[in-house]
Image (cartoon, rainbow, N blue to C red; front, side):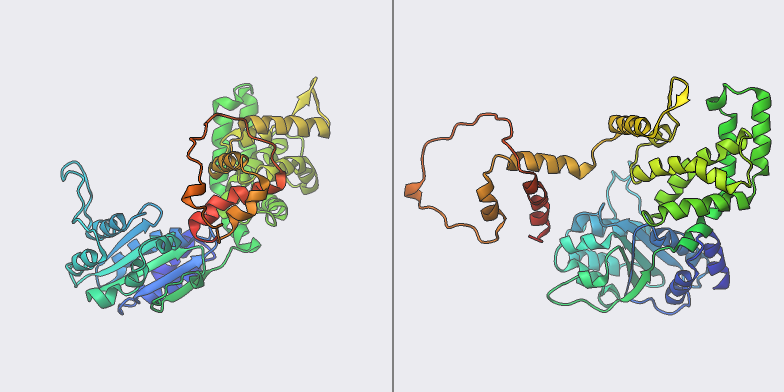
Length: 418
């Protein structure tokens, strides 16, 4: 146990308690619990820890263990879900040799249980289902049966559901079997500092590679060699001072570890520039903070925006006639470049289409359209038999207060939360 916990804890720090709990549930040689519900906020290490834990569990366990990791978003129908579980538990891979066919054709829950019961009982099985909240949109018997697979198959099998929602959000009229709940808390500021400090060697190596790349071809070889020597002299204390400054600015706004890693890497290059060119000493934290404050302010406005190298372009200092521009001109030019490179999110396009279509409805009809109780139908005799004329029109005047309700209504109605 200690060896498995130490290996995974070294790769994923600040999660030792969760790893120990997983080993107690699956690594002691006892029968697995029927179902485990692992939930917590996004970017807290749930899926990554499971992907590292299951191979080590199979190698150190006395009983051979097969596992399947799949996402409920990809398996959006019952047939795809059942066949994917069987394929991955048995190691069957659809390819050209077998005509891209699954192990068996499974069309119902009864067929799935029958095929699953044929697996060797000498092995143990773990089914990891990520984004488990999507199972609520499937047939009503899928989730209750997944929680009772050991009972209906006679195998040592466990279904491990991974989600961002608490288990109380799942409701089935017939009731659900009890599950083991494991909550994964968000990373604290101290935890994020420890995790980001583990990236110091990789960040310094990337900085060294960029100095040697074509991006700095305008520098002389002597200047590049000088900067490479400074990079080699950078200490973990220097990087820790930078991370303390960075987290003081960004931690209250964003706690997504992946996003913080990306933005920290982008800002660190600007943080090191005055140190590399010799204008500021590496231990002068106050001057380094003053130099990086504007860059962090700009990065704070573009967080969560996946724009590739655009962030680096935004963080580049703006000059006018060879001199640094004023703050107002800098902000205006920065937002202009941002507008030229930023695209709308995926669902925003559909919200705009919904708002355009709804703009042709009169404002007085909003209440009738958004109510569950519709107006009484007119008699057939009172309906006009004249065919309406269809013509293309520009959207009428649109009240800004109608936009949120009209745009969100199709999604609320589709999800059943009207």
